[in-house]
Every structure is written in structure tokens, then in C-alpha cells.
Image 1 (tube, rainbow, N blue to C red):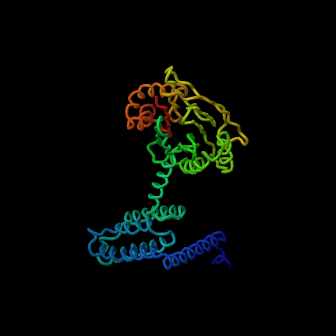
Image 2 (spheres, one colour):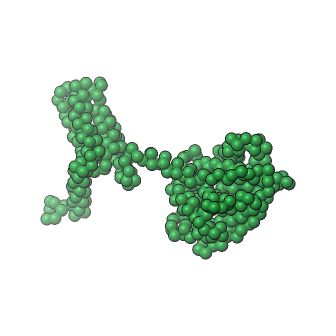
Image 3 (tube, rainbow, N blue to C red):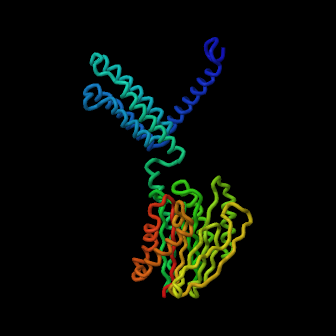
Length: 388
């Protein structure tokens, strides 16, 4: 009768057949990996050779080689081997542990048997190693490269956020800070100076989510926005960015952005916003801050959205602040209160910052640390000043 003994459970029989097929498939894959991948083969060979050495040490000198010493090859295998190769190592480790228990029971008359606690420890470490191997298999990179890839991605995000030199007559300061002290941020800045022009185009964007959850989308968008900047007429940038987000069809795919274009010869600028916090313009003559808040829908929400422009002129000594909401939103307070705090602190720091280029470059970081250092949100700030 199919399924084994007469009267057997057909469901259990199907499960047994499925498990057997999975085991055979993983075993074949392990053999193929062992034959085809030199690095995996070398690592597996070394770890398999280490098992009898540890077992012998446990039998001869359990004080120096306890049964839990098997966690070393088990954990290293979880970090270095593919899941299919890990099956062979874990099978061999299980056989080694059983052999240790039998030999020690006979050798020492049952006095130094392998305890249940040792078995649980080795099993728990094996489960952790299997989870790590499965994660690396999904990622598709060796464990040695995973961290370096993340560092490289972070560096690329920062490189893409650099503002090109503005030339004589201009200062700029930029800073990005991620929520919770993480390395990755959902806020970013992209800037470009089109070839053959004296024009700066900059966009400050805030991707939905924060920290690591938004970092991958921020990296993708920063590259896309950087490619669009300067390649399209200024009034078409935000519509093109909006269409790009709509095509991604992300579950949490909206973003806010402010697009700033300034003529570096005349100081005339255009500002467009896509649901982003207002920009701030400090007039050197009056010492007053103007709130620049053009109308515009969130990016990635409404097809065919329109974005109106606000135009103005930066006179010598004027300052423009472009930032994300993490810098001005405070629990229990209106966003205008956060904007007032930002402008007050900026007004106090500006006289000192303009004295040296080093102080000016650190102005954005100082502002963030003063206004919103402990805020659990991503923060980005770009300060642009026309020299007096």
C-alpha cells in the first residue's frame, strides 16, 4: 500500500516522501558544490577534518576539549559554507557528537558522558549557523564580502550627495544623519552643475521610512535623481522624478523632495517642492527669514502631478536652508516651532561660521547636532550662502 505500512497515515507518508526528496536534493547540491566551488570545497574539507581532532581531544582530555568544542566548526561553517554544504558538515558533526557520547560512556564507565546541555548548545549554534547561511544564500554574496558591500553602498550614497564646487562668491555646507546612529539614511541630497553653465541644481529628498528600511530606496533614488539633474529642463525634473517613483510600484513608495536651481552669476533662483518642508531664505539686508513653500504633491502618489515654482534672488550675504522634516518636527509641537528653533540657532552660528572655510563646512553638522541631535529620524541639511 502506498505510504508504507497498511493503515498508515497518507499525509504523513507524503511528508516523509517530500522530506526524503528534499534531503536527496540538498545532498546532490552539496556534492556539486564540493566538486565545483574551490573555496567552498577547501573550507568544508578543513572543517570536516577538524571534527575528529576535536572528538579525540574530548575523549582524551575533556577538561581542555569539552563536547561543546564542536560549536567552533559548526559556527564557522554557518559563516563560510553554502546551505547545501552545511548539510554535510552538520551531519558529520551530529555523528561525531553521538560517537563521543558512546566512546566516553564506554571509555570512562559512564562518568564523563556527553550531557544534554552540551547537545543543546551545539544544536542551538547549528540553528544559528543555518539561519546565517540561508541569509547569505538569499543575498547571493560570500560572508566575507557582505560587510564590505554595505560599506561601499554607504560610501556611494555619500559620494552622490556631494555638492560640486560653486566657485568664488559662494559657500555651501551639507550633512546627513541617520536615525538611531545607523550608517544608512532615507534622506539624501543630490546636486549637479550642468556642463558649460554657471548654474547649480540641488534636490533634498526624504524617502518614506527611515534608517535601514529606507536606505535601499534612497540609494536607488539618489542615483536616478542625480542622473536627471541637469539633463532635463528645470520645470520637468519633479514630474520626471514622480513618474519614476510611480513606475517602481513600491508598497511604501512615496517621497518628498525640494528642487532648487540657482544662477551662480546673478543669484536668481527657482524653487519647487513635492510635499517637502518649506525652504528658508535669510535676507542679509533685513536679517529676516522668509518661508518658501511652493505647492506640490508627494512624489510617487499622483500621476500627472504639477509643481509650481517660486522665484527669488539671493543677494550677497543671503542664506538658503534646504532640509528634511527630521530636523524641524518635534513631538507635541508644530513644525513652525521647529523652524523657528532652526533659524534662531543658524542666526547665532552664522557670524562665526563665515570667518573660516573649515567652520563653514561644519556648519550643517553643528546645526543638526544643536537642533535635533537626539531625534529618532533621518536628517539632511544643505546650507547655501552667497558671499557678501
